[in-house]
Image 1 (tube, rainbow, N blue to C red):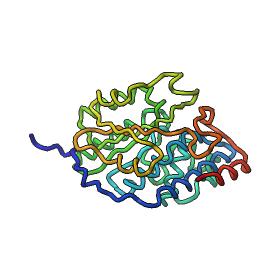
Image 2: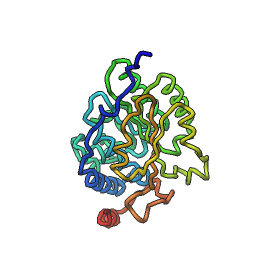
Image 3: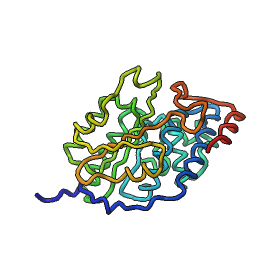
Image 4: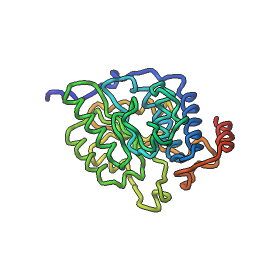
Length: 272
């Protein structure tokens, strides 16, 4: 049987683990806290849970013109801006104008900024965008990847599973779906609202390879983000909502916050 152009070999992606990921993530967390201290505040809980995933994904694939990293849980735009900034991909500090009138640093990802190919915010759409990107790379014969980071509450959207059907039907082994499993969503705990159980089995039923990792260990994230040789990949990243700020960790009420500057200063000092 002739090998599909969408099949990847692991050695082709043997990129060395950067040594500065922890430092970059710490600086990004400070920026997220600063954005929560702006007049508009931000979705701080989900931004802090996803920042290690974003920083690491961009470190591994952010310099590949044929690959893209898309944030589907667009309400965590503060995390995306922070990750892009610490990687030197944005022209200015997003915390200085986040959410202000006329600023490009809007509450959901703004495609007018470098490194953001699509505006996202309507949950589920970013997953479909990444699948479309992966399909385009497959058709063009490149080694590019469509990488998307979504939330576990977002899995309640039917579009997610419609996209998963297309992904497996087209054998998109260059598609990586990272699920930020922080257990919370806008109105509380995912388990109390619409539980998404047996995730590994669900994705495997759609023809995905599945890897389960600690979503705050940069080495685990980095190594997991290597495409499977034959199947699309789902990376189930166990994370903590509000990670890094003791007052917010695991608290579903930390979904969105507007905090005073003096509190932001104290929180930044406590980051390890």
